[in-house]
Length: 141
Image 1 (spheres, helix red, strand yellow):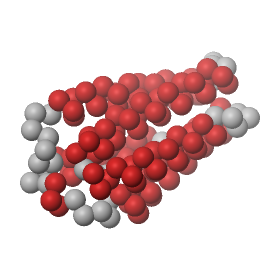
Image 2 (image 1 turned 90 degrees about the vertical axis):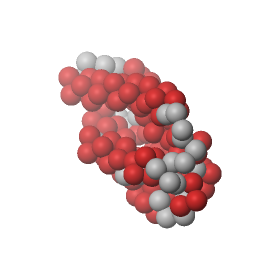
Image 3 (image 1 turned 45 degrees about the horizontal axis):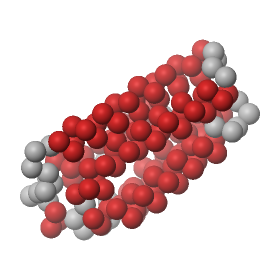
Image 4 (image 1 turned 45 degrees about the vertical axis):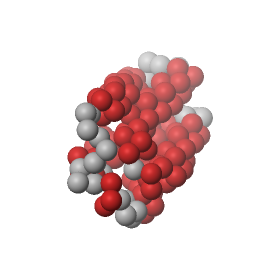
């Protein structure tokens, strides 16, 4: 899961660095608030899954909120500044959140973590297949 989080963040970072429309970086700063909150919540989800000291319902809420914050923080910049990315980003994110929600209803928390990881894996594959294939050269420096 940690490797996928790293990959999801950096897989299109080179595009974000070269955006023409992003002059001041405020969107980058404020979107990273949600990204950081998602990281913190997901770290706690993993910790509590290892310690097994959280009820299934509490785990479910934390996992869903953490993943939503993570994806919102990750996608805000691309959604705002790259119109060709908008539709694939929304579809990809909704599928991943749906997989996360579905996996939190599995009988054990460990299985739910595996399901969340599968959702992240799908996100990575979907991002390569549907999003990064779009030509965005006119939006870049």
